[in-house]
Amino acid sequence: MQYSLAKRVTRIQPSVTLAITARANQIRAEGGDILNLAAGEPDFDTPEHIKEAAIAAMRAGQTKYTAVAGTASLKDAVIEKFRRDNGLEYTSSEVMISTGAKQVLYNLCQALLNEGDEVLIPAPYWVSYPDIVLLAGGEPVTIQSRAENRCKITAEDLESKITPRTKLLVINSPSNPTGIAYTREELSALGEVLEKHPQVFVISDDIYEHILFRGQVFSNILNTTPSLKDRTLVLNGVSKAYSMTGWRIGYAAGPEALIKSMTKIQSQSTSNPSSISQAATEAALTGDQGFVTDMCDEFEKRHDFIVGALNEIDGIHCSQGDGTFYCFPSIEGLIEKTENVSDDVSFVEHLLNQAGVATVPGTAFGSPEYIRISFATSMEVLKGAVARFKTL
Image (cartoon, rainbow, N blue to C red; front, side, top):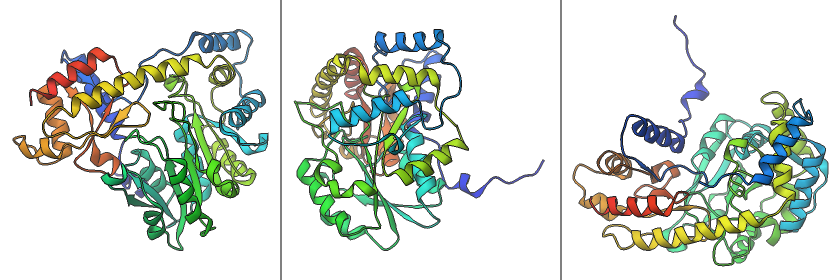
């Protein structure tokens, strides 16, 4: 049978991080010895009180459809979370729950973008940002950061990329893949630029908000520039902070008209998120937060080990991060001295095949000659991976 696929499919690529994790798992299933530093999910179990809330919800018969934008009680919990953690005030009509933070971004782009609208994406960026923009008919425009600015864009960088077609700016802090966060002063400077361009909407991707090191206090752009509230969507979720990747719950707050439009999109795609996962998320947001602190402390120890160990290897330079469970070392020196390796993509392939270590090439994040390493794994695995790096 002869048929042609939609053109939109040819514009995008599969998620590189998921593809590499699947490849590593396949090699392991075939008997290979693989240390996986590619997976972007915490290795901790979901806390017991959250799982118990899901079980209680099932036993109480909470297994039916909910409102498309989420249950009233979970939306109330999200409203209180924004008030408690971020000093932001929202009403129920300004909040929605989705099947993961990725769907929030998808809903936003579908609701906001017209064909040819430009979306500014600072690089390094999370791999899905450009492709989700392309699926909505938008044009991703990369703002390349510089190593001397710790892989963050400046106000001048932002100003230079804004055109009459610019519709949206993506801010992700702390960042996947770099683990680096913007300071209040840096966010304020970006906010001053945005105040001059009222056509530019902002999405603040705060998914790693709670994973910050050395006692740093989280801020997003609304904390520094509250005048942007009527054109900012704040995105978050429970996957990272509560180790709930498989529960698939993200949430967002923003202008009522936009949330209504995003809910309409969701009503014709996935409809409501899982009722059981929503009950678990409510317990996560309203319950004991000690798990988050303990997990963050462990990630900080792993961060300090892996960054220090990588910087002892000739050909690697790795900057200190501010949070998340990623680091983003430059491997330019290793590429130059490794036989039959010409770039970060071939280096990642070489590392997987020759040393049994899975990482993600920086090209996938818009920054060639880097690799992303996830330290959301045990210290034993990290030490083993470092030893294998030294054999190259």
